[in-house]
Length: 271
Image 1 (spheres, rainbow, N blue to C red):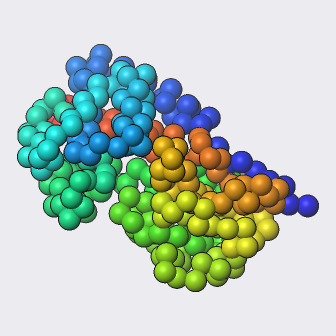
Image 2 (cartoon, rainbow, N blue to C red):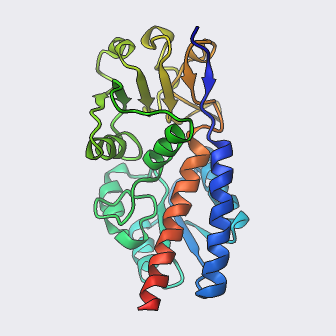
């Protein structure tokens, strides 16, 4: 009999956080490097404010300073942060007020400071795809020989995840919102990141499927995912929880990138 399994990321994120705290202490004590993250936004959105607050609090827990810049000119602010030696990591909190600026702004982030991994020339892997890999690995899920579907091909999750998996030899099939999502029932692994609440219904999910819900949207001020409640009520799927799945590991992944940026500076100091 197939039993439900909750794919939580909270415990794994806590383990990673402990390791990161030790690394930050070493950076501060041995190398006199004080890690600092700058987050830049030009939108006023309660969901975005929640995300930024989570990052700020996580950083504070492991002794990483976090600056949040609410500005009108995101591009100018990014350029200023690029040349600040006391800032090792920069995040542009999407979406921007003017989405047509997104490509230009992300490309402007210095590759060695792009801890979200969204600049095409970034020195780092994108944070959310890294988190998804950590989550699946942490739960002992081997993706080889599995039929994998990725729903949504956005710049934050779907596109970099598909690229990452194809580079590792996997062959995920990409679905966009206009496609026949009923075909998802043929796949053993479904990763969804569309930002469309409830778009993944029970008839799209086969018994025993692994479902990773990385979609985020605001519904009456509440952050919700892509998977319908009817899927979560089933007892024959492995699925991320409504809270505490990919999210905690995404934050951990971007701080891992920031720590690695600082370690690269330390290595250059050694030389």
